[in-house]
Length: 461
Picture 1: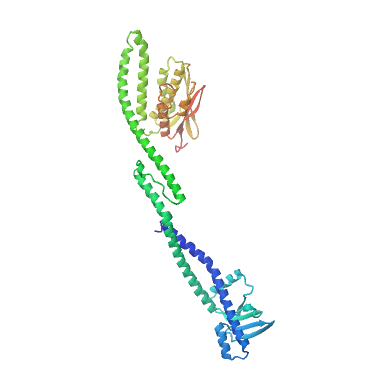
Picture 2: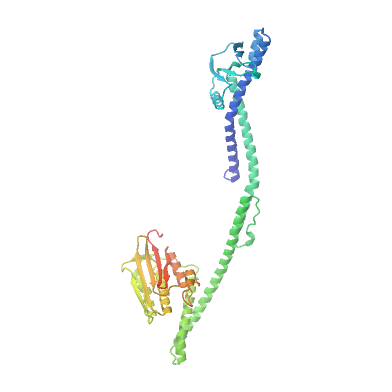
């Protein structure tokens, strides 16, 4: 119970009410002490008036009057004359004098606190103003023990009453909080738990019904989040199904196109002029289709295997990636520039980093071939304190606006006609698996520059 919100509310309510009562307790005790002494002054005044009415009273009556007033002596000042009205033997000398006529709140609180803490039975003098202006002042002597016992009794009753009030207040607050706050909160939690069991089920989305404004706002926000999440899960499921279907189709289509590729080799050997003219276009179309299928299959894998990181010579990887592109660029006036230190070692998966470099260099070569103006493809590497940086650049016409807007989005970021945009998407995913980042630094009419950043140390950039 004490770990629950309701249990803690009850405990805090009791503590705060008791604290408030304690803050009231000390002034109350001081007021009780003041009333106690003023009451003794009134009793003494009444006894004095009895003596004034009959100047000759016997000792027994005088003793009875003093006993009833609970004082030892009564001094009354009337018309500037100080007169001992009643008197009896005092058990001890006077320890302190208190003037009730000009007592301040702080002095009364201080005197009451000291009286509670002092256990000795003392005789004190109390001075006050007579009731109804029946003189200039009245003065009495009295013992402190009866007053202290009365103060303690009053204090105990105040504390008991405070405890009862605290318990009653805490109970009422508990019932109110449980009805107004705790039950709606538990309802929201229950909705969240039921929704978590089947987030695709739209029937489990919460319907706001709380009467408390803040809780209703929370329910509305929760409904919005659940609605968006349900739609996102449905879309993800549809995309997963679509991706599976596309992968299967691409697999079968690749096999068909591979067979067609074998036949095109025979067609190229034909002496028919028309066939010779059409064959290269047919071969190119089939080659692009095979490449698209292979890229789709590679991207559509459920999981790309994690990289096996080792220290590899970057210059060798770059040369391997450029070797095939040099052959493919024959006749297109494309040159290659490499600025990679011979001894530079980077931490990477050799196979995956080769695929990244091949994709970037192939894209650059295809951009220059499509432009038909030739140009240069450059690969340079930098070794900084925190990371290895590899830049792949070309002097082509730059990426079109659509390609820039969907740079690493599969099937949308193609920079040339017939391109799928999978090359950059796959490259970005592989670099991310290394803990690194693939960025487009610049693209304009003077060329395009991509940067691969591979982290050192703990793998953070």
